[in-house]
Amino acid sequence: MLKLQLKHLPSPREGISSTPTGSLVQMPAHARTFNREKALEAILYVARHLESASLHSISKILYLADKRHLERFGRLICGDRYIAMEFGPVPSAIYDMMKVADNRDSIDADWDAIIKESFVIQGGRYVKPRRKTNMDVLARSEVECIDHTIKKYGRKTFGQLTDLTHDAAWKGVGENQPISLEAIARTLPNSGDLVAYIRGH
Image (cartoon, rainbow, N blue to C red; front, side):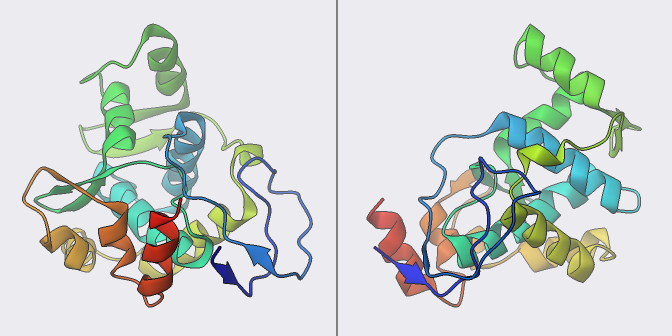
């Protein structure tokens, strides 16, 4: 089992209010199942912390935050699958949720209603929250990685975010093709350990 010397942070099932303590912790297994509830709160959180949050900027900030979380904790935040689109990686299921809010897609009656009550798409591009983020759904490690990414990249332009996310993982597949978790891991400094860990889980 891959181990890193990390400051203990709450698991995805623990709330943001949990108290961290210093310890040697095992990296949790990466999410194999997409967590739609967590994804919804991640969309709202990012949208509230970006100026003029758009489908593009939210997708790219989440990709960069996912890379940081994968590097440090061995898993993606929501367990989404990224697709290599023209302007960079797109979180497939999260993008579908944003299309529901824009009345361009449907998941099911219940989730369609939950999504539309949570945020709206204006002008076919901008994401406007309709409620506050439920912080109990996001683990402290996830919020830290999102906050770090917003602070570092939140003021980047459309073109700059596109260029930043045109990494080796994106370049390694054709347009509209899925990007594997291993390919994303290979772009990170601890790629050898991460790939071995992913293959073992």
